[in-house]
Image (cartoon, rainbow, N blue to C red):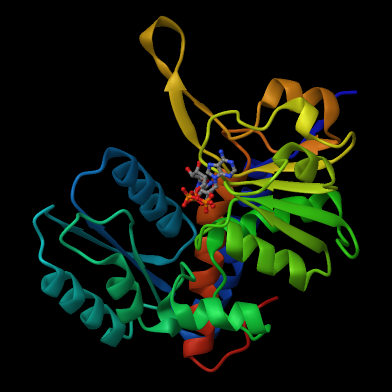
Length: 293
Ligand code: NDP
C-alpha cells in the first residue's frame, strides 16, 4: 500500500485566496483593511525567514503588514511598550511576536500583554481557556492547520481514535482540544508515555509534534491511518547540505499509512494561511462584523 500524500501547499493556497477575496470585500463594503503586526527581536535566521514569508503572504492577500524588527539587546520594558502601542493602534488587528525571544525577555509576560482580541497566534491564556471551554476564540495556527488537513481525509472525525504525540502549549495541547471539539476520541502521548508505539498504533489519526527527526517508524502506524506530521527538523543531507525532515519516518510511513502530510509542504504552509485567516477574523470582530466560518 502507498499512502496518499496530503497537499498542504494546495489547501494553504485555497485558504489564502479565500482570505484575499473576503479582505477585498471588507475593504469595498466597509473600508476596513485587516492589519497584521509582526515583531521580531534579534537575528535568529529561522525566525527571519519565517517573518519574511509572513510579511510577503500578508501583503499578497491584500492585508496591511506592519513589521517591527528590534535588536537582540532590546529590553523587556521596551518590547512591552511596543506591544501596548500595537494594542492601542486601530490599524493593527493582529499582533504576533515571533518566538523564541532573547533570554532577557519573559515570553509569557509578552504574550499576556497582547490584547486577546489581537492575539492571532492564539497563545494568550484567555484564548487558550476559551478553546478548552468551547467558546469562540482565536485558535493557534499550526494546530488549526493540522486539523484542517486531517479533515481533508475525514470530513467527520466523530468517534475516530486520535493520538496526539506531544503536549506543548503551542501545538500538542491545542491540537488535542480541537480534536475533542470534533468529537474524536483523543489520547495525548508524551515523553513519559508507556509503550508509546502501541499507543500510536491505536490511532486512526496520528498527529506528531515532538521535534525529533523521523522518530515515528512505520511499525508505529496502524495500517490505513492518517498521519499529520507537524515536525520540522533540519538534518545533514548529501554533499554537506542540510535538508528538512518531519518527526515521522516518511518513507516507512508511506508503506503503512492511508494518508500522510509531507515535510516540507504539509503542515508548514498551513500555519501562515491560518494566521491570515485569524487576522481577517480579528478585524471583522473588532468592527462588530460576523467573521466567515
Ligand atoms: P516542544 O519541544 O515544545 O514539545 C515537544 C513534545 O514532544 C513534548 O510534549 C515532549 O514531551 C514530547 N516528546 C519529546 N521527545 C519525546 C519522545 N522521545 N517520546 C515521546 N514524546 C516526546 O515542541 P513543539 O510542540 O513546539 O514542536 C514540535 C515540532 O513541531 C517541532 O519539530 C517544531 O519544529 C514543529 N513545529 C512546526 C510548526 C509548523 O509551522 N509546522 C510550528 C510549531 C512547531 P514532554 O512534554 O514529556 O517533554
